[in-house]
Image (tube, rainbow, N blue to C red; front, side):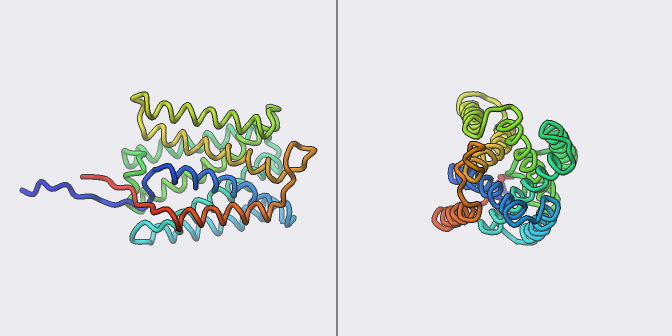
Length: 252
């Protein structure tokens, strides 16, 4: 009997510090790029959502048909989820008139439903288990909902709650610090903590992105959405090319 443990490589990266650095940069890019298309180009939230949804679907298909983990393909898909999340959340909050609170509640419900169905179908929410097309479909759907929720939550915190962009950034940074502390000093499930951190990085990126490109009168720095997006994209590409990322693995 062969007792050697076989290692099954997943299609998503191992969760390391560079993963979180790129993730936060990608969520910030999603805010600036989404606003650039829907606002600066005057295409509106609905058309902007349609454009980014098309890119998102194409990226997910490329990710699923790939035989192994490809960093550029993976992070392209992440960026696609965060840009479509920005325009979809803005469309729901503003164009449909349900407001930030209504949008946050709706998207939180959809996200929890996605988690529930994923767990019932496959028995695990761990990123280490994302190695089959079915698991990938749940993974990317859940991420898309989390990115959209993050935009609505970030806007709600900064605008409706009156904390401003700096206050919102401090709140979400503090919550992430609590998650990090729980990871190192408690026995809380690492899978639960991963998704908590993943969700919280999106509103952090949303408020930082708004801080960069919103008018000074609104509490922002009034930077060009195009230049901010270009710099963030260049930073992400540099990180992907410089730092080696390996696929998450699962021993079985």
